[in-house]
Length: 244
Image (tube, rainbow, N blue to C red):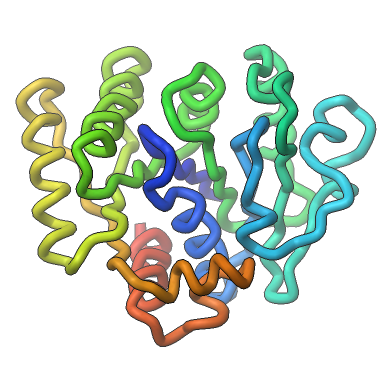
């Protein structure tokens, strides 16, 4: 099993879109995938997938339900652990609570290939601890000054304060692959100059109206618009991740 954290320095850059579509694309490629909504206080993975979740991660953490009881499985076999929305206590879990949760997922209900976390945006203690527990963290960045600055910020915290180096970059909402590579180069220039590291460019997602159209229907774009530019990008991203 490989664990992957999907993160971003700020919200609104397409992080959850990347997490849900990557997970869906991997599941469609016949991998066994579990997607965990790691934004414990403001969950939206189930909304993006159009799932009705009777129970959520709060019930599990409080010992009211088992992992199997809160899990929802899509028609394509993607396993989802729903988060809770508007529950402040879950957004500030104690380190031992979060550690116990992550350890519990290390022994999943059924054998799985990929355990993917859609982390909350930012650099809270919960986010950093969650990412540190993953084999790899993918930082979603778009070509916007605040997104670039905040994306670099989360990379810096992971590397300098926690000696965590398994980090890759995904460029979101770009005009083309060349634009994506240019964006990643700019980020890597800062990483090389100030941190002494160069991060891999894992993949990109082009600006595509199909993504918003899919969101309005509460479905992954890969599912309902499979020939769209973004869907092609997400399948390429899934291929890149599975090739590592």
